[in-house]
Amino acid sequence: MKSRPIQFHVVTRITGFIILTFSIFLFFAGHNNPGGGFIGGLMTASALVLLYLSFDVQSIKKAIPFDYTQMIAVGLAISIITGIVGMFFGFPYLTQFFDYFQLPILGETELTTALPFDLGIYLVVVGFTMLTILTIAEDEA
Image (cartoon, rainbow, N blue to C red; front, side):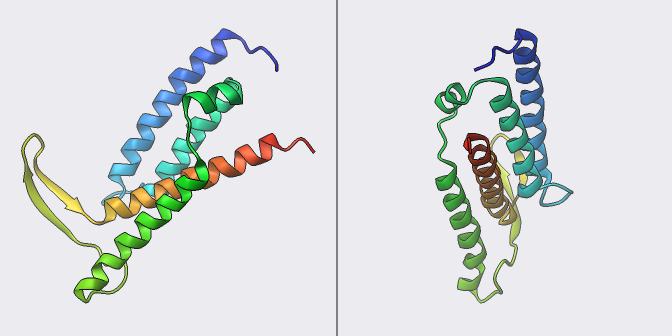
């Protein structure tokens, strides 16, 4: 294992935080503006890859103990279930529903079925991207 300079670790932490914050913004902006689960998931995966490049794999796996295979399965389940819900009410698959609700702290807030669908896509993209990159990186052949 090569030793990396401390400056690289510091810059990685700052940059990773900025990328993760922007990915969360893109995720929540996605149902009305450009963004959503796919691009938010890619941004999150890029921040995680940056951490894996800066620190050793064992340290990151200990700090972020995700099983990316299960993440893909959970994301697919959320997306499929979100699409099926409308079918119980006689609507086509993936029909989007929304309404405005008065929430205690947030005030009037729009809640939509696109958000859980985007969450499922987000989990699938992060899981698939990380699983692919880590599998390629761990292959020593």
